[in-house]
Image (cartoon, rainbow, N blue to C red):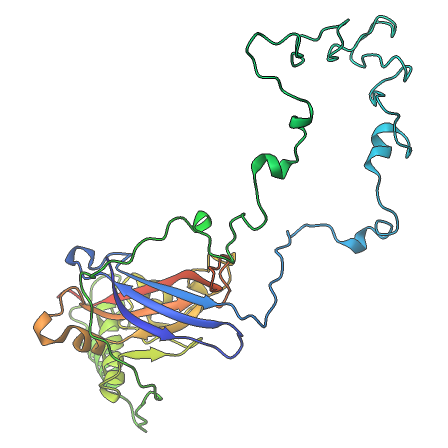
Amino acid sequence: MMSLLLQLNGEIPESPHARMFYLFACRTKGCRRRKNYAKVLRAVMRSTDVPEEPEIPINAPKKEDFPGLEKKAVQCGDFLFGGSSKPAAGSNPFSMGSTTTSPNPFSTKPAANNANPFSSSTTNPNPLSSPTAQQSPPGAPQTSTKSLTKSFAETLKLAEGSLPSHETGDARYFGPAEPWPEKLPHEYPIFHLDAEYEAIEKTTGLKAHQLKKYERLMSQTEDDDGEKPGQDNDTPSNDQIDDDIFQRFADRIANNPEQVLRYERGGTPLFYAVSDDVGRLLNPNDEGFLATRIPKCGNCGGSARVFEFQIMPHAITVLEGDGEGFDGMDWGTIMAFTCKCVPKVLDGNRVGYVEEHVSVQWEKQR
């Protein structure tokens, strides 16, 4: 069972709906550096001011495609039986002969010898017809024809409002509610966050990690003795790039030592490394953040996600404390990428939940 790390109000001006984020992580040591170590859920409360639009198939026909459809109602019986007048009582609509004799439409014999095999007449007993009172065995219940005349709703015993609906949160639709555990296996202490703008040091010269990068390139150019065949000394290795990325990460933390959360919807995350799976996907070789590579949203059919927030390493110190020994939390940063679509299924409070994409960058194992 995962533990809650963060609950964040994520309302945005361009959406009338309320949004809330829940970040969970596992404390088990066996889940470290695993794909599903952390999960992010986005809860959306649909605003009552915005009417719900019915879902329309992509290739559904429109009224303007059939201009004469609204003027005259289509009589389906006219196409089947060839006329708008009602058939006479007792006549066979499938008959091709006289309406009085009502021949069998499925027979190739003349109409005179064509009796209806489904008739309940005594002269032509139908082996498939239900037995009459005289043909019923002794002791069998007598069934009246009037008792069989029921509507579809009466037969299924469906009262009005008994159908399950996602608007009412019916248990038959969502299944039985899972009881909340009386005592969770672990709960972190509760803290309330104060939001302020991130402090970024403004310097006229080069930063420390930039100076370190150029010093390394200059030393590689001057020293050609250790050059390997096919290796360009001007091309830094992954470890060297990660050192520059980590130094940039550390410089930002030095400017904001108590920062536990970075929030910038649609912005650029602060990467901890670029040689891991997350870095190779979203920021290969530190060439820039590639937002187009973020996995698409599966709730709305593939809309683009954007960077929403990330958890900083100081949160480990705050949540775990010195006594816990950072059990299970040795990551560098946790980044969340979200969509702004409305969930398809809502509960009785008009709230729906969507699992969003989360990326975890871990500390390097030296």
